[in-house]
Image 1 (spheres, rainbow, N blue to C red):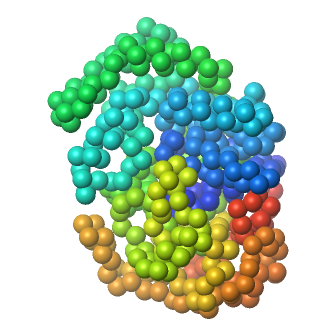
Image 2: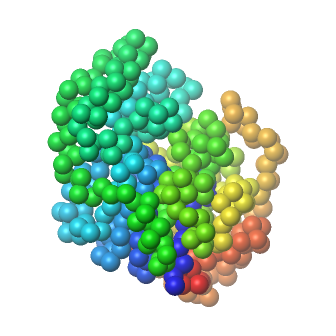
Image 3: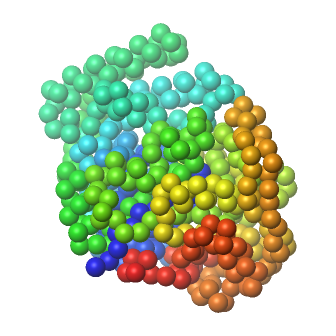
Length: 421
């Protein structure tokens, strides 16, 4: 029987999870998204065509793979329908392939308005959210006011809950943030109309996911990365959900005993979008060069990512928290152009007001200054590239089982078949 695998970003997201999921899904039975919303994007290049997925799992691009949005995901109906339409235009099959949990919470227009108003009011102390209503939606979920797809099955219940919730939202918007309220009746009619377009995809996914896992080959994917976890990340500069192993369980209802392998997705250097501490950041020409070569622009926001050397302290924390079995190292080809490459190995305390870090420690390795693009065999890598990879393995005491050598799905080295291992 094939392994069931969960994938976790080891740093601040944008590690290349989408491509790794796509590669693994070739031999998978299902892909399951377990947290986040359309505040994250997975970019994939298939036959020279770029796909950016925000909500639907990357496995949807494979005809034989089931794609499931678990209960831990918060959903914008508008974003979901847009994604469905784009996939349909590109002749990607969805029937009997896409399933959405009835327990997913809905992002309302007032969630988005509150998100933007809050960030604006914080000024320079803003978190740097995407302004897509994710945080306010999770807040309502935790305070037991949220609206789920399940509520839409009874129009009277939905209308009552929506009116109560939006009355609360509009009060805060108008009285506290001095913003215009949003019309409840318009939102009600809009959601009910759009729900009809997606209702056929909505099921009780808890039972379905556990049943699929008994046969094996299920891949669980999250959004963001370990250091954006609301409990274990660089709080308060984090997202609003558990991006780590705990989010896999709560966001899908999976019996943890059915998961066999944890894969940490790690970029060969580090990046971060938005505000917050970033110990190994390069605020210089080298950082700009990494970003330019790596095309480091957010797939969801279009924001330029901050760049720095690989942070091993964060990586080791991610391995510990998530009980990771192995690492998938992505974008190693971006480092082809450097004659010296540093790795951040340790540091002291972080000042969360200034983001200054004490006692930064680095090691510097010689670069390889030759192309790794498209290499599919580990032994064919330049000697110094192999040394770089082996150094990471030594410091983390964790094998690097997958190495991405370019954006295309076939530009990859699989040192180990983790699905069938």
